[in-house]
Length: 233
Image (cartoon, rainbow, N blue to C red; front, side):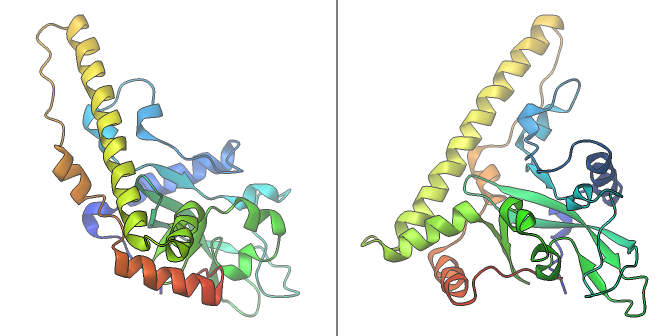
């Protein structure tokens, strides 16, 4: 059973499907993080403060652009069961991870996703390019886990790791706020009557970016060291 993001943290399901299908028809692998500040054209200024998105479509590596079945010896073409999303932790932000859940169309009829350990471990290049460590309850980037490990070995402990992540997230907020102000100015140059929306204050932004606490870092660091890379179906 995979964790379900809180309703306020979820992307609309149709948008998840659209982004996955778009990545499947373009050069969507290796995956590239989609940052809201990189979006060009017309958009709502408030979306500048939304979470980045990473679309994981390793199916593109197959000549047919279809996934392989995770059952040994099964040559079926799995069918799409569901377009999935999870919230995962980067150092300076949370982000949306999008991928697909499939069902075997052979005799076994099992379900699996392209972020499951059974799928990732079939090819080394998938493990190389997949940027997260997933368990049933959480998802962390490999960079976050490196910081956690370093903190566990540091004389300052995990307190410095948590504070580092907090500073990085606040720094990202002020960078986005600067972009927001610049784009408001550009809009007002073109339309003197333009009324800009109010950006979130740093406390509001960070409340949606609640970084890992020391206890969670410790628990997850120990799990990583004990079990290695864990993925969920």
